[in-house]
Image 1 (cartoon, rainbow, N blue to C red):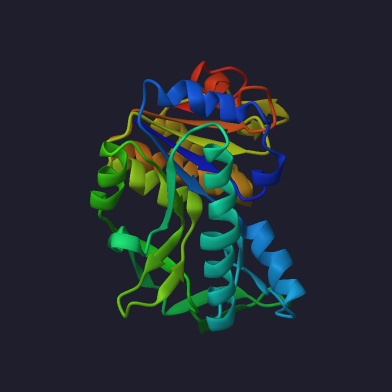
Image 2: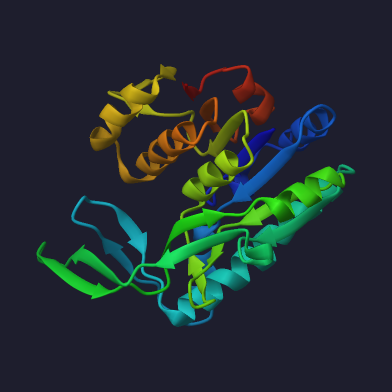
Length: 265
C-alpha cells in the first residue's frame, strides 16, 4: 500500500511520465492519492472577488485564513476542479479512480479550531476567531478500503467533517500522513516542487525519525509541514516517508528508488 500526496503547487507542473508510474505501480500495489491545491483556491477566489487573507503564527508559519465564504470556495475548487482533473488524468491511462473528500463516508473528522493566536502587522500576538480550519481527530478508512477492494484508486481532497457537520480546511500533508497510518500503509510519498529537505544548500538524503524531530525548528514553513507530517506518519506505524520532486522523469518510481530525494525511516 502506497499513499501519494501531490502538493497543490505542483499539480500543473507534474512531469507527464508520472502517469506511466501510476500504470506501472497499480499492477502490483494499492495506491491512494491525497492532493493539495491552495494555489488554485487563491487564484479562483481572487477571480470571484473574494480577497484571500493569510495569517502568521507566533512560530512564523504562514497559512490561509478560512472564513465561511473561503471555506465554500476551498471546497468547490478542491473537490471539483482539482480532484476531477486528477481522476481524468488517471482515466486517460486506463486507471479507474474515484474522487472523494474527507467528508464522504465521514472518512476524515476534525475539530474546528475555535481560536487562533497570530502575529499582527506590528509583530504583536493577538487572538482571532478560528474560522473554518480543523485539526484531524479521526480517520475512518472504510470507504477507502471499499474502493480499493473493488479496483478503484481513491483520490482524496483534504476537506474534513467538523463536529457540527461543517466543512473544514485541513492540512493536506497531515491528512496524507493520518490516512496512511489508518490504512497501515508501507510508505507515504510527498510529491512537491523541490527534491526534498535542503539544509545549508545541500539535499538531506536520509533521516531517522528522531533526527527529523530535532530538525523541525530549523526548517522553513513549506517543508516544515512535510517533515512534521512525516514524523506523524512514522509514529502511526508507516515504515518510511519520502519527499521528492514531481518535475523529474518518473517521479514516483524515482522516489521509490531513493533517487535524489529525502527518505525518513
